[in-house]
Image 1 (tube, rainbow, N blue to C red):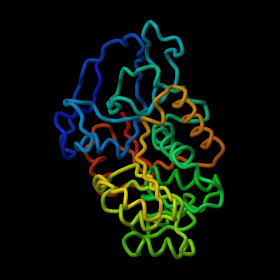
Image 2 (image 1 turned 90 degrees about the vertical axis):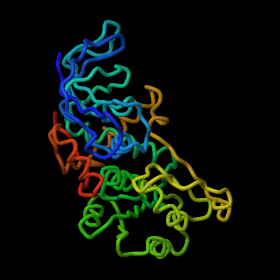
Image 3 (image 1 turned 30 degrees about the horizontal axis):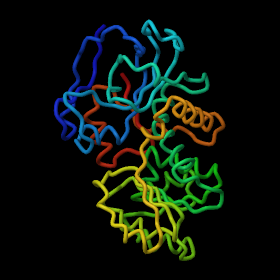
Image 4 (image 1 turned 135 degrees about the horizontal axis):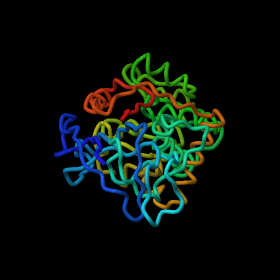
Length: 324
């Protein structure tokens, strides 16, 4: 079987991605052949393509997708051809029409979740689930500061936090993105282009600071994030869109007995039990209407280069998907 796929021959700018046609072998032991119907676009893909996360090349790219099981390996008993499935994480390679996937990573989709919803929400939603439920368990009534509030993860986090009863403070750039974040659960959205973020946070919290900051920006916002925290607060660094966070001296944390952590989805969903539990919580939040899947950009697979350019330039809002 032949499949169009995106290949990365060397890590670098978006132009290193090429659309090629390859031969797909029948699924081997423990695998399922999936025909993708929708593919998630995530900033993690940028890290993999650019070299911020080192990968052996040539390589596939893409961390999540939804689709239909076409065939299964001889030892796979939990899946059948025709099953609707989705996955997030694992080895890159979801930018493809067809792909052999480790069956253990696949989650069967409920009838209430569409393929596009699954591809747009699974990785981002599971990220929000572990951040707000497990990395720092957010409690009702607490202030929470979340970066990139108008983005894919941020839009879900605002809604999830509101459902938990938290007082969500978002950070976004510009009036349009502020308005979008306010539509997605944030009580207040600070304009990073026009306001002093730390000063505004202290005004909002009565000079107490927030108990937790979820920072996906990295290098450029580290000092600012530290200034926003209450004593014994948690600095949760889960991304680095502006570059890696600088080395953290213990003395930086000691002044207010702060905690610093750099969690990853891979660690929090390492076991199948954790993956299924996290995905089930995400789908449940969608089914209950606590979060909506806001797909604002759709790109053909052949336009993956443009999709990455738009993502890196900050020209996307909400979630984006690729269509095979």
